[in-house]
Structure formats: C-alpha cells, structure tokens
Image: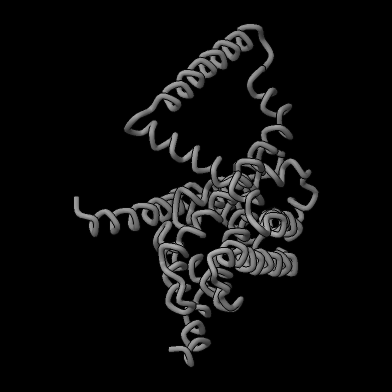
Length: 323
C-alpha cells in the first residue's frame, strides 16, 4: 500500500464514517423528533452561542501567544499575527485531513518567519503533549466527580449483580497489571509504541518545568482549556432544557465531545451523538440533547471555517512585503 493511497484512505474513511453516522441518526428520527430538534434550533438564544465563539477566539489567541514561549528559546520570535493565522489554518486543515493541520501550521510559520520546519514542528509536538496531559486531567476529574453515577451503574440492586461486577473489575484489574508489565518490558511492536508515547508525555511534562518561561506557559495552557470548557458551559444557556445542568454534567459532556474529535474530522457526525449521550444521563430529553450537540458542533465548525479561511487569504497578503 503506497503512502499516497494511505493518505487518501485516512482522509476518506473518517469523513465517510461521519456522513454515515449523520445519515443513520436522521433515518432513525421520527417526524416528531425532527420537528422538535428544528424547533430547538429556532428557539435557541444565539446570543449565548455568539458569546461562546468569542471565548473560543480567546483560546485560539492564547494558543498562538503560548507558542512564542517554545519558539523564543530557539532564537525565533514570530509576529503574533503570523502565529495566530497559522494556528487557525491548522484547525481548518484538520477538518479536511486529520492531523495534517500540524504540518500545515509548521510549514506556514516556516515560510513566513524563516523558522526551520523541523524546529517549528517540534514545538508543536511539545504543545500537543501539554494538551494531552490537560485532557487526561479533565477526564480524571470527570471520573472523580461522577464516582456515584458510575457506582450506580456498576453496583445495581441484587447480590448477583454485585458479585458479577466485582468479578469483572477484578479481571480488568489483572488485565491492567499485565498490560503495564508488557509495556514496561516491551522491545518492539505495539507495546513499544505505547511505551514511547507514555515516556514522551512524561519527558514533555518535565521539560515544561525546565522552561525559562514555564509559569506563563502553564498559565496559558490552563487558560486555553478553561476557555474550552467555558465555551461548552456558555452554550448550555442557549437552550432552556440545558440551562440548569450541574457542573459535573458540563465536564462529562465536554469530555465526550473532546473524545469524539479523534474519531472523525472535527467530530463530524460523532460530536452531537457523544454529547447527547452524555446529557441524557442527566435526565435531559433526547431531542434537546441532540439539538444542543448540533448547535455546539455547528458553531465551532463555522468559526473554524470562517477564521481559518480568512487566515489562508490574509496570511500571504500580510507578509507580501517579505515575499
């Protein structure tokens, strides 16, 4: 299988999955469901959606500014406008081709700021390590906050159910210990890749604390992810049924949406389903939950398309003198 065919395949498959999921969801909706969802869209308070987009823009600006802290020790100080536009270009490219945005971002900053491609890409990888650590922390927070909910599902009434649950958890614990041992001793194959990934996360986390401007970097990392969660939270006020969601529901819904982004391009077809599934756990009706997921995903995607498209257009214009 040649590399060009593989790239095409990895581009088409996620989009096809997303379109297939959208078709499957729409085909299972009754006319009443469709009417209810459309009604939620029409009655939504888009002032809150607009506010969430402003918050989203702040997170993107913070990401562009945070990048400076990784580039400066290498001897580069790109213009903030160039950093911002290349970050936005990365987002829109990722909508079309998964994980290609990082390469596009490194290539663009390399072209307009004379930063070697490999060094620019290395700083982006370091950023991603910080972001993965933050996502893991938020996922852990979701599990801690929802311990009672998880316990309620695992330990239902009846001694036989409890015994089966304890047995399953014991088996999973043993499997987990075996996996840890295999990863620690891995010399090749899949487990070695996992080992390298985990070691990379640890080294990346340690390197952050060795940075010259570590505290500004950590501040912006926290700020970016607080803005992400705040985007989600603010949008809940757009629909009456989701206005009074508890904080733990916000975190669980956010995590569900964040994880869906890895399955298809920008969460196409998956994001609304995952988010709706999370909100339904908190006694929100199916249709408002679906409507919220679609409003959230549509707003984010339109923002990326608009600002990413404008960045594609204005980046060469802004740098025309240099060109």
